[in-house]
Length: 276
Image (cartoon, rainbow, N blue to C red):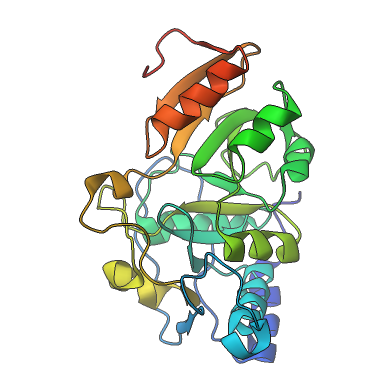
């Protein structure tokens, strides 16, 4: 993917066509912590029917379709959008837009030596963006779900996405809106938690209100999990599957026990240094 994609101009045109304001854009390459961009006063909040984890019976009346169309338009134009997932609220942008990737790092104040995950809509999409070394049945037992699977990346991914590593973490959240969004968007989404780096991960949109002015759209799917339980803020379980026959737990996350059991059912062995 070309890092010179004209995200800013495209974003302005699409945002104007759907009545949404232009948000932050830009990119940077050093490993320093980046300052948040200037606030964007026109951030829009759309609420999903119910929890958003289940598709509305009547998507048009329930606001589902409106939220989906708005999010896709913003993402295709290079914007950063807040979204609900099966674990936490996240920030999403097009993984193919280098300026949008830079904006995510600036909004979070995140070091650019820390990678972003890639969110996809179907297990079949994993084979396009990764070199898969595990059985397809294993992928289908883990995805969709609260896991991030780390594999060797393919040439299909934007070189500006995590340029410091040959690996990439793949997410397919067990959340219907996120699966719809990734499928309708039609390309890889970069995904990370919707918080300032080192701060607590959010389970509802009110918990990251300080980021709202820097976003173009916030999709409110209601509270996620039990806000009183510390385990609910652990995020996805991150598993390294880049070495054939082995797995490594990079982050225990919220689904360590069930994920490890599935991996061992398929005969994979814990690698040296795994968190197990």
